[in-house]
Structure formats: C-alpha cells, structure tokens
Image 1 (cartoon, one colour):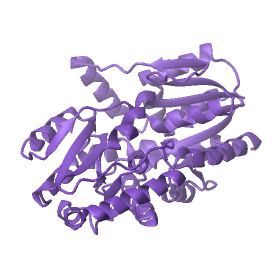
Image 2 (tube, one colour):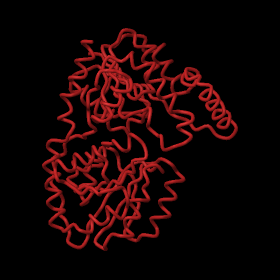
Image 3 (cartoon, one colour):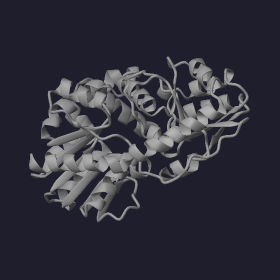
Image 4 (tube, one colour):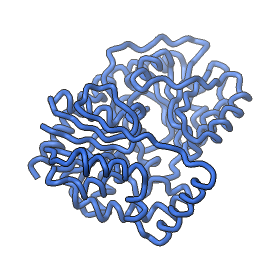
Length: 384
C-alpha cells in the first residue's frame, strides 16, 4: 500500500507522527513523508521544509500582510501564500504527481493542500486536538486565527474519508460542531518499555516535568509548589524550546529555589528511559482553553511508561486515567498549593505503590494497544 504522510511539524519533536510511521512500516507500506525536519525511520521518500525566521522590515511586512488578509477573512490567500504551503504544493504538484492508496493528513492546516492534490486518494485526518479553540486564552489568536481555523475545518473536513483524534471529549466536539461521523479515538500512548520502577528514597523524592515552555502552560505554577512542599522534594525541569522570553523568565525564577534545576532536553526516544530514575511526574496544566481542559498529552503516557507516580490537576481525561490505575494524586483545583498539600501527605510507601500501579498500567496504556485502532481507521478510509 502506498501512503503519503503530511505534517507541518518537526518529526524529531512529534511522537504522534513518529508512531504513525512505525505502524505503517510494520504494515509493509511504501511511505512518502512531507514534514519539517527529518525522521531516522527507514521510509521510502521524504521531503522536508526548513522553517526560516524573517527579520527586520521583512518580518514587519509579513506580519502586516497576515493581519490584513486575516481581518479581511481572505483565508485562502493567507493559506496559499505561506512559504511552507508553497514548498509542499510544489512537491505535490511537480514531484509527487500521482495517486496514493492513502494520505494521512496531520492537523487542520494540511487540509487545503490535501483537498487540492488528493487525486482520488483516500484521506485519513489525524486532527490531534480541537483546532477551532486551540489558543482561546490568547486575545490575538482569537482576533486573527480562531475564525480562520473554524472556517478551514468547515470547508475542508468534507474532503476527509475518516478522522481520528486524541480522546473522546475532542472527538465528540468535532462530531457535534461539524456534523461529521464520530472520529476514532487514538490516544497519545507511547511505545511499551520493558523496565521496572526505580527505587524510592526515604528522604529525597525526585519530581520531573518535561515539555514545551509556553506562558499558557504556566510552568511557574509547578515551581511555586516549592513555596509549600517539604524538604524531601526536588524538581528537575526539562523545557523543550518554545517561547524564549518565557524560558528566560522561568530560569530566573528557578534560581530562587535551590531544590529546582533546569536540565537540557533529551531526544524524544530517550525520554522514558531517562525519566525512569525519578519518582513522580508532575503536570499542573491550567484549563485556559478547550484543549488544555480536555488534554491527554504524550507526557502522561511517558510518565506511565517510565513507571512514575503522577501528580496532576483535575483535568478530566487525565484524572480518569490516573484514577483508573490509582497511580498518582489529583488535586481539587489547579493551584500550586493544592497539589503541594497532596504531595506532602505522601509517604515513601504510597509512592512505591503508585509506581507499581504505573508498572501495571504501562502494559495496557501503550502504542501496541493503539495499533489495532489505526488499522481499523485505515480500513474504514480505504472502504469509504
């Protein structure tokens, strides 16, 4: 089966797309990829766009142009003048002028390209999360991009044969708002790692958080837990490059807390083995938008595979998973003090038990379980 996978993401930092490629390789597919960055997986053909940063007057002109066309709701012009779209369009038009058995399109921003160049191919959309409300906590995004995202979905979802997303809440939202069949739910569960929980010390409990550093994710809340945590607790922060100014702000804040340190990022495929040395994975994500409220992120499954106890706020989907396996604590709200109180109450015995429960959960919550789901989604797309 000939498959085209397209994603406006860096494959070195996108575990969900990386898993798609793994599954397709296991199915003996011939794979072509359009993406940012390179994959080291043995695919047949790859075309990579290298994003570039405009500076000075060029950057200012581009921002003014984007603002004008978005405010005028000239969404087609905004889309087709983007450099990454023009790059991929040239590839699809002049170098990949053929029909595939299946196209796997990642995220809404691939849809106009796929609609124009599907050439009879069947299309499976992995929407990941709910695009029309992705950054509603940001006023600029609401003014310029929210309606663009909504209208792009409304116009181009009919070109999709089958769709999948990360959890039931988001699948239901797409089905209800856009009057489409209920998408498949394919969680962000990572690969299974055959490892044991690490030992827990009596007097030193090691916390870990890793992820993209952005203001809306409020890393500072996790740091301010240390205004309330007892002296057993230590935190390592791995900040994936994002908002540079915010990262510098976090680094300055960390200097005030001797039991917190920022450590360098590790490669995507090394996250689970590296974090196995810790005791508790912590994620206090404020529900500032629809996706954050209903998030079920990669890192939660990585915590489980690393055999860590988990400490989170009451995000419904995450809470459901942690409660199901009794592998962590869930605070009553998203305040730093509330989660700190729960952590302070934990004994070494409690943490050992939670890590053992995560060990059990790892056998059920992994990418192997999802393999059957994506096979079913592909089958439905091909038969549509």
